[in-house]
Length: 322
Image (cartoon, rainbow, N blue to C red):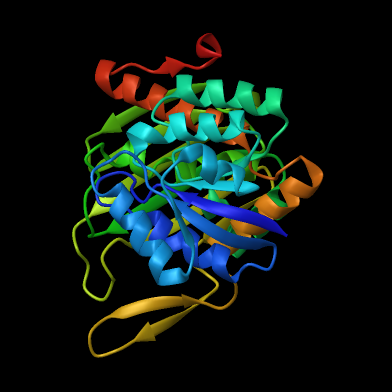
């Protein structure tokens, strides 16, 4: 069983995925034991860490070196500007890491973490957990098994309704999820990016090897009746191949729950964050996690290229960036 310390209780804007997602998932996972919390340097970080420790009977650390010494795994969900540095420090201390998404504020930071992880022989798992949903796992298996023949195009829609807009824009905040899912389904990298849109809604047109293309529409809509704030309004994929078309509703399998106040969905099995911790546990055992730093590097490369494309109005070829 691996011991875990939670570092940072922030994110992008008002996010606190540590409290909302990772803390409860680690608390119920049989492969991990929570031992403490550590605040990051952002305003209020220490107070949030102290409260979480008090609420859950954990130790509240104030010294990073002491916190890292007490744990096998460091779960980093610090504000995005601090995240990459904290992940790098944990890796230098020889600790395995689960990192909130995106792994770091820049591709340069992610490449540095990748080098450090290889040098220190530790596992770093970024929170690309959306691809672990049952429908997307099935889609990946079907495409890899040739159920649609040779794939030539994927259309992906990932729309969140309401909630707090990201101060960095939804390209940085949300787009890595569908981009990562598309690359996972196809088993292909991205060679060229053309993107258009604004802070709330973006469209990415991606080229992959062997003439395969994909289009990703991603962003945040206004509040929709019956959906909780920041709920997934649309999450779907259409994979076209030489011998058929596969249409995937990635919000399923789930139960739809209607009350007098709102409509929501409830998963019929373990959620994707629980599956992410399964990936982490298996990665620690084998040294080869299903999701690793290379996935974060790939998606950050695409996201940064997309922003350059939006800024210039021209496509960006990724071979020149590698």
